[in-house]
Image (cartoon, rainbow, N blue to C red):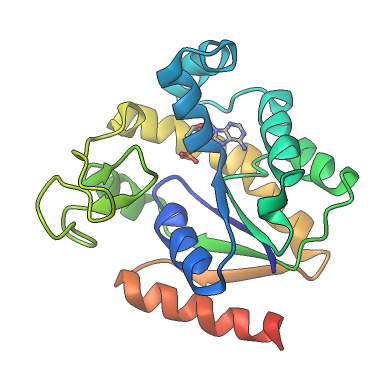
Length: 212
Ligand code: AMP
């Protein structure tokens, strides 16, 4: 199954993509995680991406298209994949299509803006890609990752001002791709508010149609 998961920053894409990946035994790739790793390691790509990320803007299309192209060429993707946070602009969606990659469904996790701004202050993440929320999805031990026991932290771009910029970018540049995939009959809208497990259930129910 070849999937895309999209949604505003903090809509829960990361948490849900990990659950889908586990259930269907397919890998998930987050362009945000790949970029944060590059920033930490100080690679040329990371140096280029950092100022865009800190400002809550998208990094240039060619950078993320390159990440995805390399990734989709690996053996890990042979039996399917989930793209988390890519594509995020029409040129990225067109580049993916031009790669000749079949997409079975695009899940759009929908959460209103005011709920997003409230959620972001409670988000805690781990370098392994796991993501938590202090109230909605807490780790078993406060500030410690359930998966790898590393210390959790708040992302530099989760402060209120940057979140507002990221939301504005989402509405202006990313949301139009929902229409692009809807016109191809591939878009599945998922109500993204409420209990994390309930949202996962909604996604699994929706994906039953794809599996059938
Ligand atoms: P995320 O972890 O998905 O919220 O991404 C964090 C940041 O990485 C975003 O605010 C962007 O600056 C950058 N980023 C991640 N994915 C993309 C993408 N597909 N296109 C452009 N920038 C991206």
